[in-house]
Amino acid sequence: MELRSACRVLLFPLQMLYHIVSATVSALLPSRRKDLTKEVVLITGGGRGIGRHLAKEFAKQGAKKIILWGRTEKCLKETAEEITLSGTECHYFLCDVANREEVYKQAKVVREKVGDVSVLVNNAAVVHGKSLMDSDDDALLKSQHINTMGQFWTTKAFLPRMLELQHGHVVCINSILSQSPIPGAIDYCTSKASSLAFMESLTLGLLDCPGVGCTTVLPFHTNTEMFQGMRVRFPQLFPPLRPEVVAERTVDAVRADKAFLYLPWTMHALIFLKSFMPQVALEEIHKFSGSYTCMNTFKGRT
Ligand SMILES: NC(=O)c1ccc[n+]([C@@H]2O[C@H](COP(=O)([O-])OP(=O)(O)OC[C@H]3O[C@@H](n4cnc5c(N)ncnc54)[C@H](OP(=O)(O)O)[C@@H]3O)[C@@H](O)[C@H]2O)c1
Image (cartoon, rainbow, N blue to C red; front, side, top):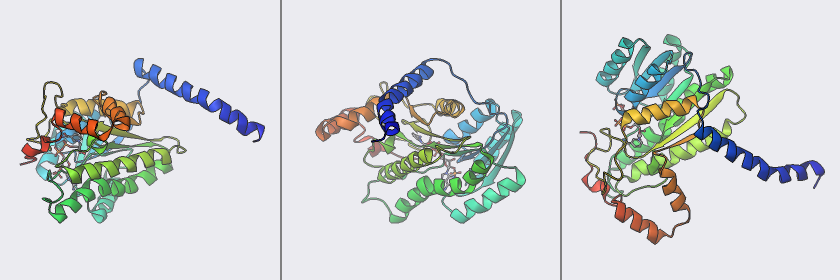
């Protein structure tokens, strides 16, 4: 082995130690946050739920323009009006992210009418809440098309310009269910797991692209209409997150250039336990916490 390579190998553990210590220190101390005043933020599914709160939070933190995409005009219009009233320029467009042609067409319209998007938030998703055998084939396909493929199309539409300008951020609102799936939401968990792989690959692929970053957020159950009816066994112990908190923490993670955010942070423990615990023990945890049967009472969006 030549001397240069040998030195690199010897220095590698020290480098790792440095990164771990510096990440711990910056997590504990208040660190610098990115200014959002020049950012044009596009949020898919921005009309309601977490997306609506994200739009309000980006506006509150000073974003220059907000663009909302979704399928339900009423919600998009209401959210856009609220944001415009608060003093931030806001536009909405009807766009089904599962429809590739529509995404490319609307991306062009956005560029012409509003300008270049510098922060893309992939938030839109659906859940059908059924087991594999009870699921309609089209419904299974639909959740993969919206939750996973939709992100391919939106990212392909907006990332090239971010790379050209050396300025941009791609955000994905994922879910803890991508790493700890539950029965009764097999389509959703699968789509979120592939969307997580998409983001991990994208994040690494952008390492050599100055000015362009990624943030993936993995929230626990959040109080919106999406998982309405779902019941965990100890709600006092595992209360659902509030969508405004998810939005607040997400925008802060974007400003801090954080690549992955688990909400709440205790979810790290779950992922750690999963990495070494025997399957029987994990099954007991699922039964004890009620996650094993929590989808039995699922109603979803009515
Ligand atoms: N709620 C939770 O417990 C929870 C937990 C972890 C992660 N998440 C994630 O957080 C994100 C937001 O979820 P939420 O709880 O806010 O759910 P929600 O209230 O049901 O909102 C979902 C949003 O996605 C939009 N959408 C759905 N299909 C679409 C399509 N084909 N094209 C464009 N927009 C579409 C919806 O708007 P239209 O219907 O108008 O299209 C709506 O604005 C999702 O990615 C979800 O997986 C949620």
